[in-house]
Amino acid sequence: MSLTGWGPTLPTQIILNADDFGRSTNVNAAVMLAHRQGVLTSASLMVTGDAVEEAVALARQTPTLAVGLHLIVAGGRAALSPADIPHLVDSSGSFPDDPVQTGLRYAFSRTARQELAREMEAQFERFAATGLPLSHVDCHLHMHVHPVLFDLLLPLAGRYGARGLRLPRDELWPALRHDRSRAGTQIAWAFAFGLLGRRCLRRLRGHRLIVTDRVYGLMETGRMGEEYVLRLLRNLHVPTAEIYFHPALEPEGEEFGPNPDDLACLLSPAVRQVIQERGLRLATYPALTGSEG
Image 1: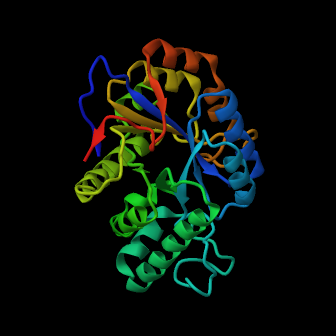
Image 2: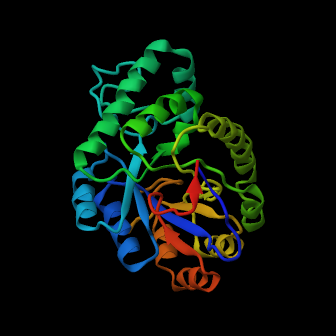
Image 3: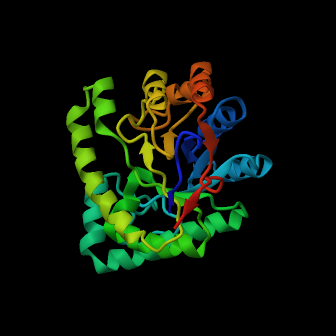
């Protein structure tokens, strides 16, 4: 679904999302602070996270925070036991960290794909058990745009009532103008996710899931600082956009993972001021308006 009739009289709608909700008490506290005192509008829940029960309790107390499912199929813990999905996880129930290696396994192993289908449904079931409305679906490391995963995801998202779906549709040049220190990686990401994203859009035809015109956060993942985000906001000229962050009160020791700088950006008075000056409308996937199939 895409926004129609957009023009000068209809403001750009922006979703400001926090990933890894439920990962730790550190992340949970940052998400709630960013929502209550900052501009954060939604969060993506890790149903296998160490602090998922706390996150669910906080979300139930805060209905203004839209919550979606942050699927884990690489670089995290599974919902099912190792005995149920032995071709996917190690003896501790953890997926491999390498998304490329994991993606190849899903592509070439029929057994792995069968186990993956069961695991993905188990994570949807865990989210449903929380009783929270399912705002949207995305995936750790954007693994859901992998052709195998995406084709498994679409019927699950429909069955469990998801309203939106994240497609990483970032822009390369603004990121390169901001900082070229990861230029090689960013160019590779732009090429790979561009190809995968176009396939996903074709597969979405006829489905009722909402996708935004742009999704920012990939090119500067792990370092969504105020300067970069202000530049994005000042130059937004699309009907809808999602900008995602990884906020935390304290660093958790991962280059692309939760960090205090993302939290500071979400709390920044300058960020709030630009949103107000440009007339941008804070939104969530269920609250996006003006869309049609």
